[in-house]
Length: 208
Image (cartoon, rainbow, N blue to C red; front, side):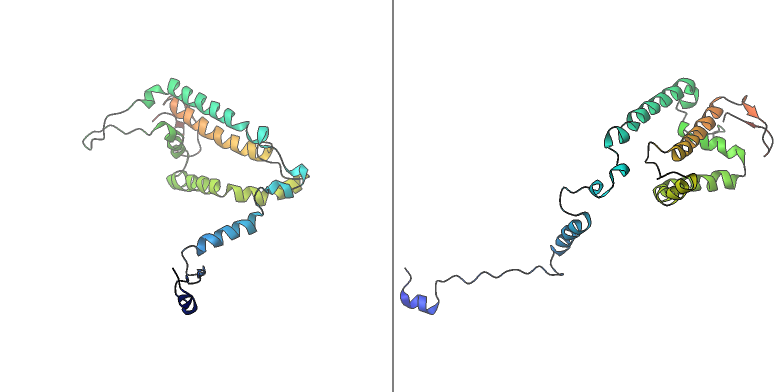
């Protein structure tokens, strides 16, 4: 039991709770800054970027964004099936590497187009320059599409640059690239008898 004298002396009274300030040196400070930046950059929870865009520049996820995926999946399965059917001899596993063997190693099926490309020009261009340019182009493709696309649209007299899935220009470029890979792969699978005249080093044949 606390007597009046103890109360007067302050005994038995809990000390006031001190508030722990979270400053730049506190372990939770980066987390609080990140939460604040998310609210500043993206607005309140539940707000969508499309809310600030005109109706004519938005498009729904279904079917505009959904329909390419089943088609791409089926095309991939069909391509793999055709490669397994017609290129079965080239897809067979070979013996283990042996430095004493004179057998020339064969590339895997997904490298056949690059293997055929090596025959079409100087090794420096076909083995280093072109593959590097393709990889860098794919990495920078979103930036190229965002910066160069509107300029092409204005030159062609279009009101705006079409969205993915409805863009004739970018769709044609992608089809040409995939078609080139498919042609080079099939050319390799046709074997040494598939030869065409070529300006560099004479006729070029398929096969490995």
